[in-house]
Image (cartoon, rainbow, N blue to C red; front, side):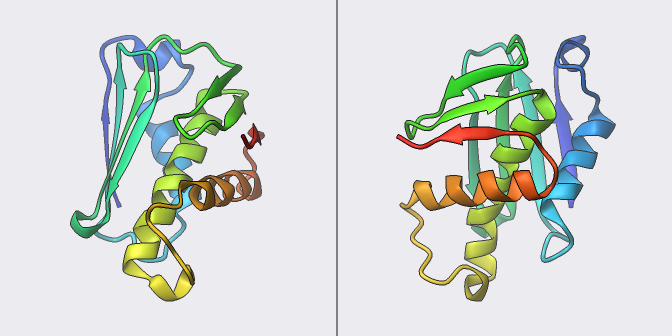
Length: 143
């Protein structure tokens, strides 16, 4: 897995993280299966919401997070889920897990039977359970 962290000066410190810590979180949630050629881009930008997209066919996951997001925080995603993140690492773990769900479904369909790329609820269910299994203290409420 190739990891690219793009952040303005001071942004990582403000989130109480580092490029190395981001890499550690991504390695924990990704595991070892089928990620040798995966590229993960983590951008910290002056915005108000997080956003992520998986380009599974190209082996790219692109995630964007807000520079000024205070942690702990509770925030609603675009699917109506209410998330509680104690820290940036937990937030990153959930978003990365959600996008890895799509990536793995594309490359290893036998691991995700009945996968529907339009079913974002399944991605969130997986992300919540996986992040918690990896030790992150995230919580969520479904709409």
